[in-house]
Each structure stands twice: as C-alpha cells, then as structure tokens.
Amino acid sequence: MTVFDFDLFVIGAGSGGVRAARIAASHGAKVAIAEEYRVGGTCVIRGCVPKKLLVYASRFADDFADARGFGWSVSGETFDWTSLVAAKNKEISRLEAAYRATLDKYKVEVFPERATLLSPNEVRLANSGRKITAKTILVATGGRPNVDPALPGIENVITSNEVFDLKEFPRCIVIAGGGYIAIEFASIFNGLGADVTLIYRGDKFLRGFDEDLRDGLAAAMTARGIRIITGQKFTKIEKRASGLAGTISSGETLEADQIMFAIGRSPNTKNLGLEALGVHIDAEGAIVVDNASQTTVPSIYAVGDVTNRVNLTPVAIREGHAFADTLFGKRPWIVDYTTIPTAVFSTPEIGTVGFTEQEARAQYEDVHIYKGSFRPMKAILAGRNEKMLMKIIVEGASDRVVGVHVLGPDAAEIIQMAAIAVRMRACKSDFDQTMALHPSAAEELVTLREKWLAPGEAAG
Image (cartoon, rainbow, N blue to C red):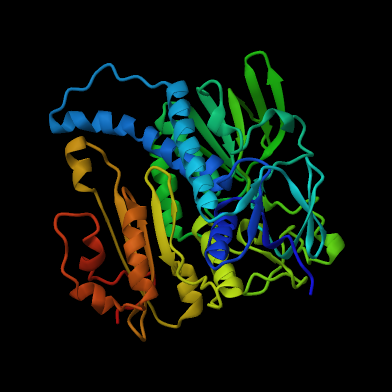
C-alpha cells in the first residue's frame, strides 16, 4: 500500500481551494495547500471584496447630493483616494488573516509558494524545490486578466490586478471591456469623480443579460456622464508626457491618466505541468472536468474559475465543498448550476436570476412578461430621475416564474431572495398571493399584475 505525505494537496488558496481544504480536513483528511501570492485568492485580495468596498465609496457622492432634498445641509465634502486604498488594504489583510486562521484551525498545512505537478500524485514547490506526494491533488488556481499582447503599447495599461493599488487617483480613465469588471469599474470611477470612457468592441455590453437590463443600464450610465463607445477597440496605446493616448478603430485618440483593460479572464493553467500528465485542457485553456470535478487523470481534480464552468465565487465555493464531501466525507453530491443568482455592482446595480426573456422565448412556446419601471421613493425627494426596472418572466403553461430581473438600488439584495422562489419553482400566482411589504421597492415584484405584450403579440 502506497503511503503519501498528504491525503489531499490543493494548489491555490482562493475561495474554492480553501473551502475544499477545510471541508476535507473536517472529514479527517490530512491536507496541505500551496499559494504563491496571498491566501484568499482573487475574490478576497483583488476581486469581489475590495471592489465592493470601492462601490460603496463611489456612492457617497450621490448620498451627499441627495441629502439636501431631505433637509440636510452638506458642504465641504472631499475625497481622498489614498485614504480609501489604505482602508481597503486594512480590511483585506484582516480577511486574509481570517482565512489563514481557518486553515490553521483545521490543521491544513500552508506552503506560501508556487506548486506544479510532477506526476498524478506528486507536486514540486518552486522556491524550496521540495517534492510532496498526495493521494489526491486539487487544482484551484483561478483565472487571470486578459490583455492583447500584440497591441502596440499594451505594457502601458492596467488590469483588475493593479487598479486597486494605484498610487494616484486617475482623473481621466478609459476602460476597455463590456463585462462585469469593466462596467463596475466604470461606475466606481465615475462615482468617485473621474472622467470615464467605456469602450467595447461589441454593439452592446453585458452580453447574455436580459435586453431590458442592458438597455436600461446603458441609458443610466450615460445619464451619469459616462461616455460609452461601442463597436470599437484600441489599435495602439502611447505614453506621452501628459499621460496616455489610445487610438481606437475609428482613428479617434482617447487621452487618459490610465487605460484599463477588462476584456475577460483566462484560466490559470499555464506551466502547471497538467498537459504532460494527460490532463485534458480545452481550447480556452480550462481544465476539463466531469460533474464531480474530476479530470481525465483520476487522482487530479479541479474547481473554480480554472475549469471555466460558471466563474463566480459562490460557485467555486460550492464546487470545493461538493468535492470534499464526496471524496472525503462519504456524502456524495454534485453542484446544481441552474438558477444561479448574480449581480453587477454598477450604479445603478443589476440583480438577475433564471432565464432572460430571449432565453425563455427560445425554450417555451408560451411566455408571459411582467415588468414595471418607477422612481424609487428616495429618488423623488432627492430630485433624481433614475428609475428602477423590475421584470418577471413566466412560463405560460405552468404559470412558473422562470426569471426575475432587477435594475436599481439594492437589486442584488432583492434578487437573492427572489432566487429562492425561482429555485423552488414558485408560480406567478404565488407571487400574486404574497402580501406586499409597503413601502418598499421590492413590493413591485408581488404587485405586478398586467402582462406586458411584445409588439404584435395578442392579449390572451
């Protein structure tokens, strides 16, 4: 019988890797984890958590302005980027320490260095050169920001890796991309007072989201002063004495203090030794796994963004938990990827779960749409013209709610609760029979009664 140094060796101490390590250890496994950067991974160190802190900071300008409509006199407010970065760093360090404390509590040995695979049951640590064996190896190395290496001047741009720790606040910034990260940082810097331009090669950002949300958010961001350029991309970026100058497809030059690329992310699989062992890597560079997160090499598993299934932190956590319960806890289960709620922390923000209208119409013969647009109560006294949008998508034959979409303040908080109803296969009649909580914006979800008709659609 082969004796291994560890029952489980995890490469990557992000959300998925740490959860897998902790749960496996709680089931009695001897576990080690290697991390070449900081414990916590992208989400905690330079992703979801610090981004949400910046989102909060960016919305205070609205709060100060709105306060006057409620009788408050606010004057002399100023913003200091250095103070915000310092406060953010303090919180990230606290969270990293909490992650490390959790690993220590469960007696998971942490190696603060890069690990690569030598065989199906052996890894090598880059700094020490130490070789370690394990019965099972889990790869949870996440993803990395994409850039265009062939673009002249690409060395002058920043990505989501660098944006959180800029020494100076960019008074003018151009952001390339049309996904979560690009949209969120456009709103963040706009709210903090920067001149923001968003450039996207497609015709409309947030591909895959409901069309009403895409259009509504674009209109709201434009009204807030964000310039949105679609159908264009950078052809070169130059560094000048006054800052950066990026030329786009149309020939226009965009000048900025910083140019940020948020054009997607790729799985972190390079130079890990996976291919040499026969682990199947797809065309996007992702590790191919089955529904139990097992690769084509039986002793090697993978979870999180490195598999490019659904690249969200809660999904990575759930995958890591399922892996550990199944392999070490004798509690086999697999992750259900349906009805995953998600949010875009733009201003205004988006919360969404289930099918978009387009997806529902492709899936079902009879689709009913209910939607409403209104000014939130707070916006009325504040004098804001921004509106909330709420949309419910119903499969007509069964009356089942198959999608809920919200654009506006606290959309993420609202959609988390709506996701429970959608997952439980609630019907529109269940929404209708639920007592409204008044006065609230969320009550609109249970008071929408009039079916919206698409152009040419007959009432029925």
